[in-house]
Length: 136
Image 1: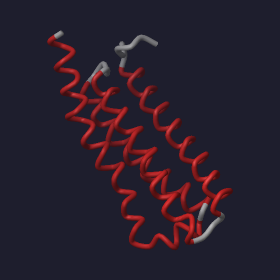
Image 2: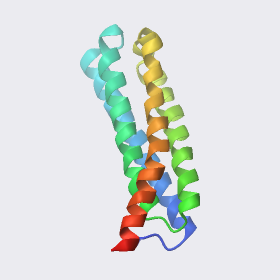
Image 3: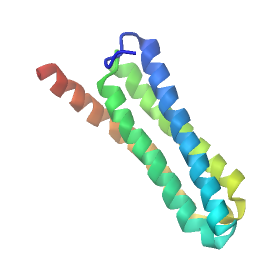
């Protein structure tokens, strides 16, 4: 696959691969947290901070995908969709792998909205990268 997407299908495939990789890394992280801390209040901080960090970094990489996309409009929509998918997938993984820790998080679990905000912030960042690339 070339660096710059040639078709809209390439854009879709790249965002799907990014989301799948982020959810796989999140699942591995949560399994490791469960093995180290068990399932309970002790695992809350590690589970939430690690999950949010993985998902946020993946969506920041989405800014590069927007910059290298064939169609910027479609890539912007895909960035928002990836944010929603990772928000729901990350929350579901937390609830499935460390359910008592997720329950103990209480209102702190609202920090899981940060990846969604990152997906929105990745759009202007990616469009800026696209503009800089056009000038070079």
